[in-house]
Length: 334
Image 1 (cartoon, rainbow, N blue to C red):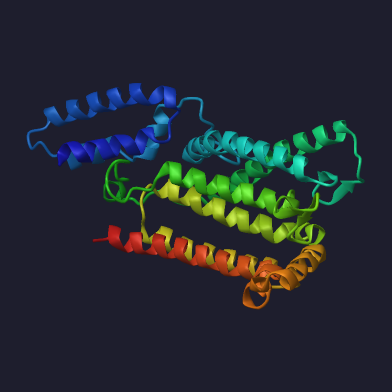
Image 2 (image 1 turned 180 degrees about the vertical axis):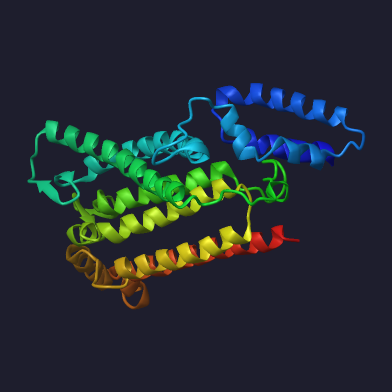
């Protein structure tokens, strides 16, 4: 039990450090803690760890170059750097693949979400589209993550309570820890979907008689870029808070509920308004109904009103993701 508590404390420190420092810091902390423990007569691990101090402050001791002042400083900077190193390369890779698919299937070349070139654009324009999409998505992810951490630093949001021993994160292999990989995947998915809907909505479609037919009205979908970005920021911010907490807490549950409400509002703004269906796609599905009766009725209506289906799916995902955090938070209190 004492060993597990010590390992949890060490993990709370090293999770904020660069990967190349973690092994050395683990060894050094193990030595320091055991020396203090052996110097005591009561063999009280909790007292030793309390004497060591807050894990966040210990992490700063091992990072002499970490800025102590600025928009993002101290422990916030350590966490900020960790999230950037995890998320940005993955976002770049995912958007690279999406960009290649987008160029292959597009009938025209997109330069920015709000501008397009006519049919027969030059290969150089396609290359510019590719570079703009990849760099733009990475910059977007960088800005969103930076803004979240600037707010956290500005408000001096406490990343742990004064009784830090009670809030030590579980070890990754133990039950109910916040999974770093899962949070990173969630952030990448949120940023990638935002890029898909705002930059490459035409990818979602089908080919008929040699012509690619997008499901959505791409111009209308791109005009909704602001709620998409707010939605993405809420999702990314929630995952960053998960990493900051290190485990499922009631504070995290409260934040999840607020973020869920905000995401639901954005979903209604995007998918609950005017029809987003591409008229050409609606015409195509209506034509299918004459040849295939299965497309006539409820199925056909669902296909020609994709935003309704998307709204139901998104609200269900938001609800169950929020419910999962709340349930785990209550479980962790037992």
